[in-house]
Image (tube, rainbow, N blue to C red; front, side, top):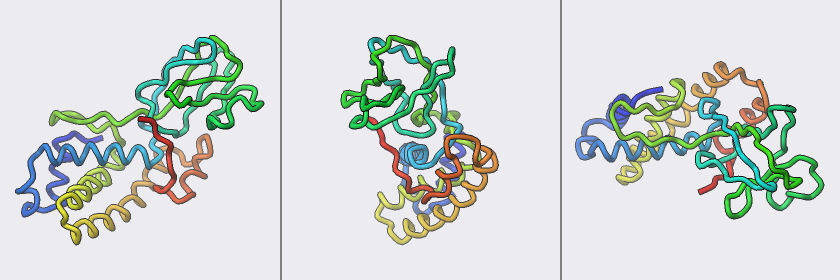
Length: 211
């Protein structure tokens, strides 16, 4: 993972001084934070997985604030190691013995109406950077991809469309190498159909997000 200072310098290099001389550090930081959020929402990155305890009362619980989208989440009882299957709200309570979903109000629900404490592994949100020493929290394998994405966003916002198209193409090429590095690091097919995720239109797989 890289610091904000390092990533901003990389954005400057990507865009060139003629462009960045007109940009404040705040603009680059904003672009890097936007790019970071887009990256973790689009790419399956194990480094952003976290585990927390969720207390259900009569089958309902508060959804952790850091949970924003589906990626390799797992809800289970540590004592019995029994897992709950995630289903869409429309399919909830339709006969699945142990299932969970997110209601329209953002509440987590489990079938059976139990009062129980469960363990929830999920992808967490991107933490915005503000200080030079703040790190992205993302794996080093995608540092280049992160700065490229940010530079692409800056170019688009500045209506530098030729530069934007060039950076976008470079970013799409770079993501192929980033994917390979992440596959090597994360073991490709460790769990939850990881191979299937990578092999199906990588980068275009939609994730349902929660505001």
